[in-house]
Image 1 (tube, rainbow, N blue to C red):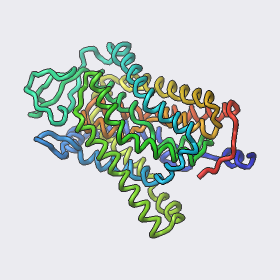
Image 2 (image 1 turned 30 degrees about the vertical axis):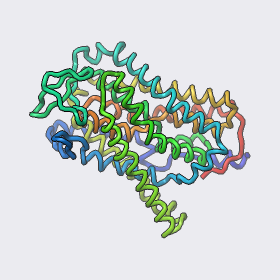
Image 3 (image 1 turned 90 degrees about the vertical axis):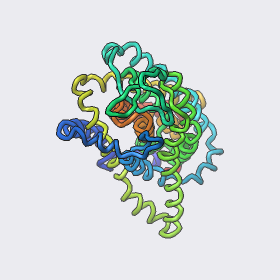
Image 4 (image 1 turned 45 degrees about the horizontal axis):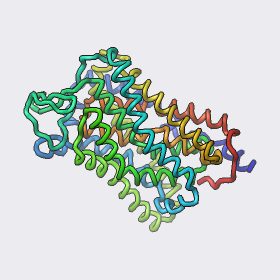
Length: 400
């Protein structure tokens, strides 16, 4: 075991994009705001490049392209055949599914409602409003009420005018129902967890999202007076999860058959490594170019959104880590099980928020704040894991 622990101790972030992600996100915030000042119509023009259904923009083509390249490199890394091995790792897999789908969405709802809807409502602006897309397939008259919103005409397009805090609230909900399937591979690796088990849990969560993301999203948004038609959520899952998942599975199978697994891992994946982050950063520039005025007029907006997200992350991590101790898991299983619940699949959350509410919506901004705090907070939790690994038993693991 000592050899295994010594080799694990050398684990570090070597990719410059992952290592300095917070810095890159910061540059994108500044760059996006500057771009919005210099070319105020650019983001709006790009958001107008959309697939329309019944005259309403449904899928933003630039965002769809960016999000595909964010998701595909993640999906192609996963060997979904490994899901069958999950039977031998029942406790950590059960813990992950329980925390991610039975607890996390509801604690996010409650925490975000408390802070954004009560404690910070006056600071955000009790009367401040946001314009979001009309729900897919809905055609109401101007002035009609729908959920917490009122139908208005903006630049000749029917939009819903909703309280600004509810728009941020919607973004938090979309983050809370999206368990991480990407960066958690990094967090599990850095915390010296069982990499093979992490891949299995990522695969299971990706498959589970196909069923539960739309169900929980529709339910919680509806309860929050932000009703979204089921077909819109279904379309979002098909485009942003199912499509890259299928493409990743098929191309992985084809490449390994044609070139071998060594070439796939050492050459193909090496080229793909920065693609996800580059696509993410391009998306962030677009988002902040449109939200620059909102941020400049109220620079503490990001802080008000970040606080409930930070509390939620720490709470879910503590819950997962504590339950892992109660279940007597080894440290190598406990660390990734807690990490996958604490971190968020912000790629899907960003995609869904832009599809449902629009590129310029407060909901999209809230999901971007999730990206902003993800790296520093998760690195803090990695360090906590490493310092407390003596709380758990250790076992030999075959790390991939």
